[in-house]
Picture 1: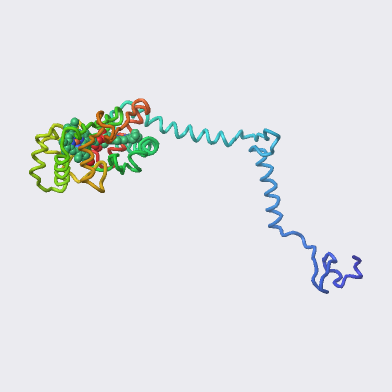
Picture 2: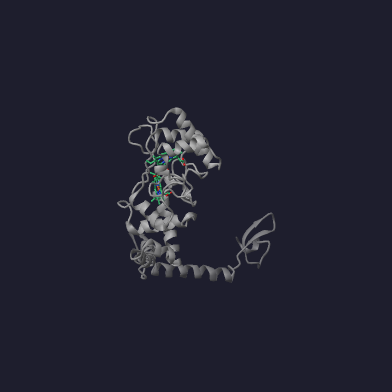
Length: 286
Ligand code: HEC
Ligand code: HEC
């Protein structure tokens, strides 16, 4: 626009004027902004020289540093593995009891076994070994087979399968009722003489022991405690069923099943040791 038509002559406006006096000025960009702008251009060029940046079909410019994302990831993995390898090598040469006694190693074993437990054990024994109907709690100090580190290692390595014969054919319903009531009374600390006599004469003591506290060599349950393996809600019915149909009893298709699988073929020795330490430390190790 010609200067003579500009109502604000001499001002550095662009000649664009609205509402009589609102003008667009042509001031230089502030210095701080220009510094920032050129710095970012410089940064962009430097980045392009150092790092991969411009896509070229399948590939891209490489950058003089030779950095790649997958390379950084692989370095990270190698670093973790180097740390783990040190522990794993030590564990390979030690017994589970020795690992347990070593604070640093047992800490590593527990952390590492938490994932193994989630993958291999949790489906049956519950998160944190809290157990469930038919699957023993691993986080208490009540053990079918023993809570020493050796017993736990043995359980995981070779599996367990406690056997109680079915008594449906050898005991009358009334005898089964009496015995079931006896076990419930026992768990509540109450006497039951008729039951106690049957217990001794019908062969129960051979597996559960004369004091009914269970024999760990057979994995026979402790009948004097308040822990019920199969059905906590209806203890009497549960006891009757167990006595009638047994546990893992070959001669009764309705028998209760209780099979702890063997892990020797599925997990490495190191993993089994770590799991044994983990289970021991869940709270009930002896
Ligand atoms: C398929 C289900 C199943 C899986 C998987 C399983 N368990 Fe078991 N586990 C059992 C059963 C059932 C028993 C009880 C066996 C019995 O009564 O004879 C048991 C018993 C045990 C015991 C003995 C408990 C005691 O009171 O003495 C330990 C220890 C144990 N399991 C640890 C583990 C660990 C560790 C894993 C994972 C590596 C695992 N289990 C995976 C079902 C399972
Ligand atoms: C051959 C050995 C054997 C004999 C005989 C035997 N039991 Fe058992 N019993 C076991 C085993 C082993 C278990 C535990 C199984 C498991 O937990 O996996 C068990 C479990 C039980 C349970 C379930 C406990 C619970 O916590 O739920 C009851 C109740 C029981 N037995 C009562 C009896 C009575 C009563 C007799 C006598 C009539 C008897 N048992 C005879 C081996 C035996």
